[in-house]
Length: 317
Length: 270
Image (cartoon, rainbow over all chains, first blue to last red):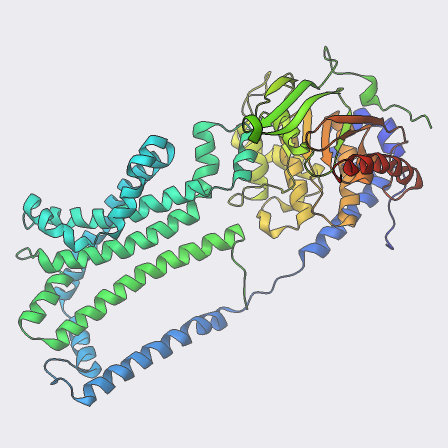
């Protein structure tokens, strides 16, 4: 190895012990061998860090956009092809042209935004309650062992239960009300949120727990400073899945529980079918799909940001 | 060779003769015939300001021993006295919290610190300043705002060292902390550790399976047998500091210890 190792640093060490104990300042002033040593370390650090290139914004946007744009184009083409094949008459299965025109018309109407607002408010309220419930249940179950044995598998069981199966009971209990919808949305989403948190707590790396323990963190402080942050990625995955369940439950609910004078996306879907308004029905479905994907993308972005911060994410291109 | 004793050795910490004392410590995993005896009656003293290396082949219970001293686990029999001083530990992995910046990782040690005499828990701004000082000690003052994953392995271990120092411990336990590093980085970190150990008058219990590393660093090298772990021999290392891993003196003493270690391993070959 062709690197000079510094000669014995006796000057600094034997003589200036008390001065050195005054950490920080004394060290930086300590010229000569100690300085060479520090510079050697700095050189090694610089070599090991390397440089990372970041691509421009335009390139990244384009790289993200073109696969999506192509996929949409392919779907539209397939849809048009099915319509052209003439298996169904146009008034039963509208083509993309008619549907998109209908969607454009609706985007100009106040009623559409009212419906979206009602649906989104239900989604947000239901999902927020589901998160709160999931957090409390998840925290309790992950902390208390007998509770884990009692209800751990029940939570997973609830997750597999189709939310639409809850509606008859919900309607019996709450009637055709907002509460019935919220009830089912919460039941649909909360198990995923709770499971995400439980999995995160379970998979907290034991090494980090030991490190936290060595630092003097115990019980609640260990929970707050180590276990909760460590379970964040898993919790986020639970949120993402919970949102998917919440959105599905909500659509099922809005189809079944129709409240007078309260337009919603599900209700629009229901009436479009009653009135055999194929273009309107498909237009509403597109809106439901877009909202669902949009929120999912938000969670995806949060997940990516988290992974990048933690270094779990390998930066490609 | 008579090494001049350093100032740290000449002034033992007030009122204490040992920093760590193990007295007939045994550790059994499992029960009865199926149980595994990891440590069998290990007695060991580490004087204040002393650097002791624990050496042994695989399965000698080195890491178990450290866990016991650290209080992460309890011995089946015997006594461990280390409570008099504060104990910090470094692992083979840096074990930094990936969700915190480098500085915040060090600050966590200050925040979590059990309030000793007059130390208390420093306020946030003060914690940040103190963390910067500790990072400066390991030559990472410029990297406080980085995240652990942005640093190299050697740099992360230095952050872990800074975090351990920030605990204001008298006793530093190290479980093969440089095992995963390349030789060049390891050499530099040996120098760093030696410097910090002297400046701060630490008592160090350093576990390794690398004989030269043990001779390079230790005032004493304690050889453990495998399955169960027992103290086989205690080698004083009286070479002048600073030593170099590739020097003839270190190699010579390491060879003698390696021979003894081989005999120990051969016992298991039969």
